[in-house]
Image (cartoon, rainbow, N blue to C red; front, side, top):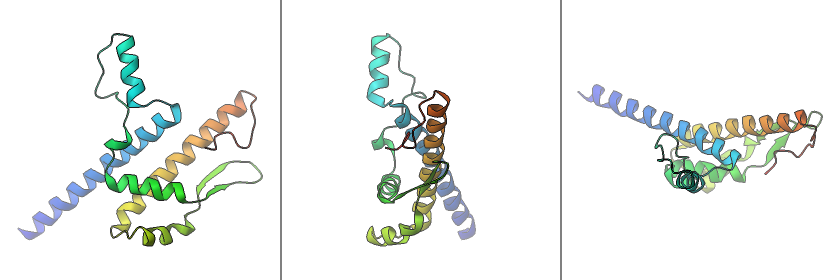
Length: 146
């Protein structure tokens, strides 16, 4: 009985993390496009369209507290850029242990998983935006920096 209970708890935790990782992706994609829940609802009202719950952008307040902490820590980490090609390499994670200590994080694995996803999605979005700027002839090494 105890073994089955532990498996259910782990399975629940895995599903929760997977759902939250999906929310992170949607939240960061919407942020990079400049679309938020308020703007979406305003557009629906103007166009007289019923809001679709599946399409409503994720709001910061929709994220779990662990995710918002992971985002805060990620935002504090310095950025790394490739000097020659100007590609964004993500956050410098060498300071991560220090921030986990400062925030007194006990669930380090979960927070680190969330930070890794935030970092990887940020790399993807910044480099995608940079390629778009290069393709349109607007080639600035800072294109995509926030």
